[in-house]
Length: 261
Ligand code: CO8
Image (cartoon, rainbow, N blue to C red; front, side, top):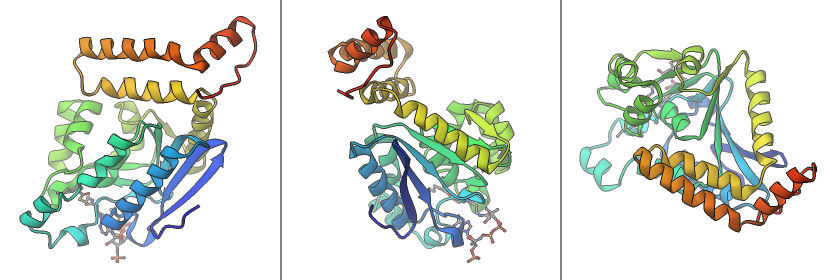
């Protein structure tokens, strides 16, 4: 595996790739070089034959405490605009076809919360600390927070969090639907995340990618178009080997041996 300055990468189980944000001195603040490394690491897992699902995590103390405020402070409008500041963050949502599970412990603030929301499944600890505190810095969320948080928890709650900058616990995040589940401890979070990743990695890669693609369409398309899109993708899966393998194994009461083709 390649070595990174701000990340650790591993394959903790067959089919599972893990990216750990590792900038402990700054609570994993997301400086531009870190984002470039993250895009690189995710891109490599995305094209790796041995990986079907990706875990993105930080430390027990911080998933990520936001964009790097010290890097942003002197930025001018012209620089931000002409260099497309923050734009490269969205590569995660446009170029990675494999599911990404965010495992959030500790702070997930500003860009950290936005990064977690870009992932496909969000797990957290009960003690996790989510928030969009940009208003306290004289700005607003810039990596999708005002849009994704609103879709996840509804307008009134999102408006309250973004306008006050106050934090949301992992317990509330799970109750409000921002997170799929809140675990009682860091250990339980990492164990539960790995278990879900292994479950997913046990299925056909073709079906996994198609499922992610179809669910994500629901965020962009009106219902009728989304349902049509799903049906097209569903039809197309009858062209895969794994569809024959999966359905035959069911009829024969056997465990399917996927070819991932
Ligand atoms: N950027 C840079 N450095 C940071 C950041 C950050 N976001 N967060 C923490 N650090 C650094 C601290 O400066 C400190 O460094 P040093 O030891 O050199 O002083 C170190 O990390 C440890 O932090 P603290 O001492 O503050 O740790 P505490 O445990 O006391 O507090 C907190 C933890 C509450 C998380 C606190 O660090 C904090 O409030 N951090 C900032 C949180 C924040 O405001 N995040 C939002 C940033 S804005 C953003 O993400 C916008 C994204 C899109 C931007 C679009 C613009 C166009």
